[in-house]
Length: 387
Ligand SMILES: NC(=O)c1ccc[n+]([C@@H]2O[C@H](COP(=O)([O-])OP(=O)(O)OC[C@H]3O[C@@H](n4cnc5c(N)ncnc54)[C@H](OP(=O)(O)O)[C@@H]3O)[C@@H](O)[C@H]2O)c1
Image 1 (cartoon, helix red, strand yellow):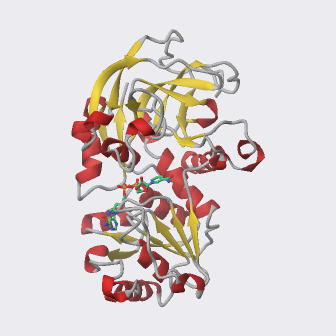
Image 2 (spheres, rainbow, N blue to C red):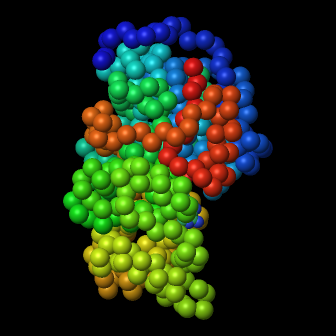
Image 3 (cartoon, rainbow, N blue to C red):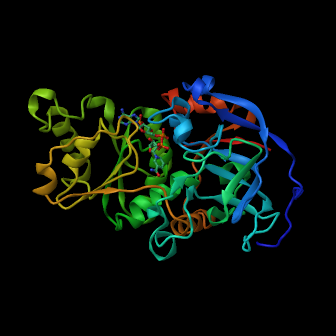
């Protein structure tokens, strides 16, 4: 696609200012308070960088952390005076910096969110996610996609699948690529593996279900409403646990960390659904309130793979179930370009579908984040159209 001139080719003469959704430290709080539309300078590309004319931006949970200023205020994430978030984008290359050879103005692109220095040993032959300068673009950096123009490293670019519209193309990158790395790369998931998926109807979960179905593994979906169950069914899932029936999935204080009644009932339910099997893999991102159960229910020598901690990052578990049953806890973060490209081929081939459930207008970006933060019926992924 490089070199092709596509529809509405933007000028290489970038305008001087643009509209962007900005978060500032002094107004940290819920998205409706924290996010304000401001006029800011259009970024210029440095060496190895690309400016994208944004067509649509995918919404991720990380921008809620930025709005709330948790665990860190945006001022401590990077040196930019303002924080423009947004870690997923679809758009058109509008300008390229020195040293960018593989991409040209006019290319239709999406991105993966991992930025790294490109020069160290980790970036060259080992694993860019281990680079000491590794950052999540649009969260640990500014210049994200909630703006008319976004600045990325050229190594973040991936061709936009032709079979998707702009909003669909913007909605899945960070979530699918992270789920892909968790299951396919870090857990080496196999056909018939039983995979317990927390938050199965959400951003990560909806792609974890599809990856399981794609390779004939068996998703066991944790949900919290009939509507969420219905949504997971539409993705091919058949086994469900309603977490409302297990109000406390972490130990009672008086039990010295040992599994409590709800945790044991939860494990019985998993076994009932699977014909007696414990999960080969537990897909974790909820954190404090589920992690003790994740370690408890994984099968002997099974894997608990974790990429986040929505309910708190101080995790506890009964370590006897870890060492005596030889389980593994695996940390996983984002993806590298190779992971992202492999996962994107699955979208191009139609094996994985974007789970876009609602599209907002650019002017409603704060409202969209409010939906993600507070809606009890949220499923799939959200995007905003920016053009
Ligand atoms: N490290 C990385 O690379 C990376 C990448 C992507 C995301 N993340 C992190 O992963 C987390 C999830 O992201 P997402 O995009 O999937 O978010 P999401 O779309 O909001 O989904 C989160 C799911 O978590 C479940 N949940 C929330 N509170 C819960 C509780 N108390 N107990 C059990 N389940 C609960 C909800 O499911 P139910 O209410 O239906 O049970 C919800 O569907 C976030 O913290 C995000 O920052 C990290």
